[in-house]
Length: 208
Image (tube, rainbow, N blue to C red; front, side):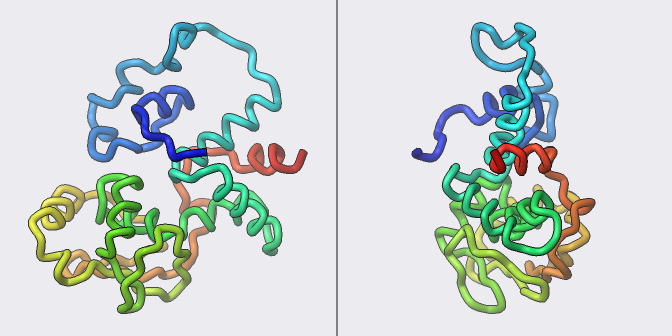
């Protein structure tokens, strides 16, 4: 399946949750979910009874859309999570959180995860001093992520850093805004992950 290229605000309305897919717009009253909190389409305002399977499917879709992942990628991460020790659902979210494009977004170095993915692909970031242009690269505890010096000096990046300077950064990331570097203190625990999903429903969906 190709990556979704339609109106991303419809995805938030379909899931009934802010997925922060539109960058700064999501933090204002211009957010589509604030104005129309029902699902898009002709029957969006109708009340429908959702089955147990439907609830599981919606949580899986919500998580996929939140992180901007294709079904094959997300399923691969689930299989990885199932092989690790600990709670499978928490392992799954921890893997998604540690993607480089997600880390870049959380640090405020891009306005959205989609933009972060594009910036990573264009080679604007380094991990431990080496350029990494793979959005799915998984960072580890102790890694140092930075913006390339040339990129950080560009007007576009200066504007992004200034606009997102007050955005809160998760405690598992230690950012130095002046130097445009950040250290991965540890991989996140569940209470450090803000993904608006119930991961146990995703595990139930894939375990059928």
